[in-house]
Length: 253
Image 1 (tube, rainbow, N blue to C red):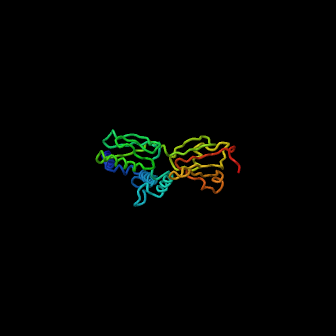
Image 2: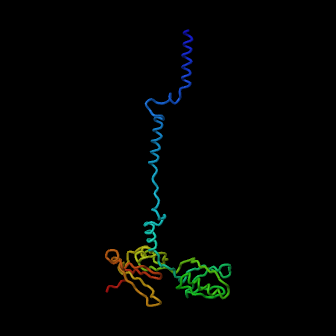
Image 3: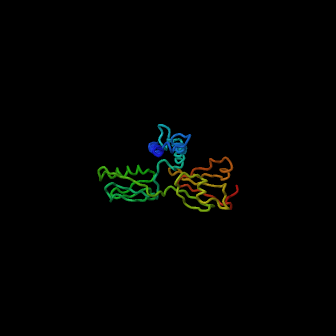
């Protein structure tokens, strides 16, 4: 009888172990379902959410690259422009293309007399005009031989926009005028003054307007840098010649 009772208790214990949920046996005491693991997962998720920076786009109605900073940068670059419309000068090289006519398409250099020579139509004046104006002139002449000619001009070499720096500078010579350049910048491009430079006797020689009398502009380095002589720091123009005399050649009045 005792053996039967023990067997009955053992069988009941096995049944309880089989039927009892495994989660209840593995759950830590005093914790919620999921325990520390659930809290850890929540903590990690909160940390990840906090570490992701917010990516704010531009204000409504404003696209990227059109804000105040973009306009300021554009204005800075625009201030470096030498001229709003490029005017062709002697020694410039032009690539002239006539659509579907290889014989009339040429690469030509502007001659000292300001003209270019093309097959069939002869000479065309280029100096003093923009590429668009020269394109229109060539198209007008070609209409006598070809119906609706399509002409385009590419400026391959810019040789007429240059300044000359002479005298007591480290590297005198001819320098291309690729962007707006002031008198002080011109001296810097030429390597700066030499020890014998008369830096307060600077002279800029400039061609007159429409073939008029040549202009001569005087400037003093000390006035520009040390005094309120900013007006003497003039903008150099194509064809200007900046001369830095020597102290030994300056005549004392």
